[in-house]
Length: 237
Ligand SMILES: Nc1ncnc2c1ncn2[C@@H]1O[C@H](COP(=O)(O)OP(=O)(O)OP(=O)(O)O)[C@@H](O)[C@H]1O
Ligand SMILES: [Mg+2]
Image (cartoon, rainbow, N blue to C red; front, side, top):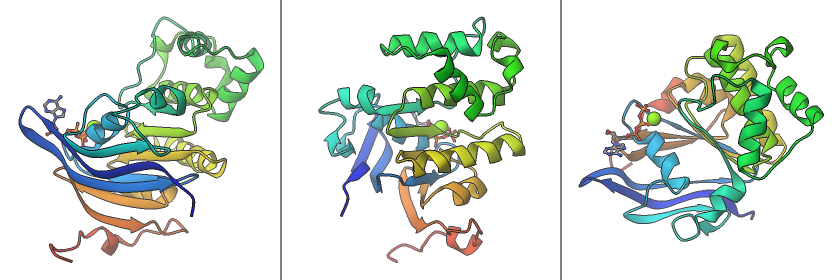
């Protein structure tokens, strides 16, 4: 049996005496996409931040490739690319300049060809590559951030509501890219409100409500949605 690459084991997080995550457990193996679905305030971003070492569990563990993040936070820098809810890139720099700058922060340099390949792959139109991000739409900024994540060649990806604010065509392109990255061996945790997107790209779907996992399902392989699956089990089931 292959090892879990992303694993939450009875993870609890308390902030200001409020319990935000309650004994959350899930896992994903190499090449799997796990989606966590939940409403506002369910604890989705907190889950990701705990895996990034930005929040400390009060009990339980968040592990990446078998390494406890709280004990060895370096694993995050080595293995993870993170797409936050709001993409943080510089408005006065172009897509190419942003990518060069952020790669340099992690000690990486890439050739013009490699950067062009990544920007083509995320389908950012070529005429925008040398324009400042200040004039970009949300989808274009998102594509730039995804290209940066691709160039970092991270084996583990955390995506926080990656398709919110994107139009249907951009969502479709994005979902296809996520599936492709998983086929190439990336392990991906995506948190979202989007049931439809989750069903299209995820192998497993967890339902998070008030900091608790209230259901965990295998996603339908053909992308067809069975809404009955999203009725959480009753307590004790
Ligand atoms: N640093 C913090 N201090 C206090 N409370 C926090 C902190 N971070 C998160 N919370 C609380 O934890 C709960 C979960 O927040 P979280 O941001 O994880 O939710 P979410 O599922 O990502 O929601 P959204 O869909 O709105 O992004 C919320 O009730 C929030 O108010
Ligand atoms: Mg959030």
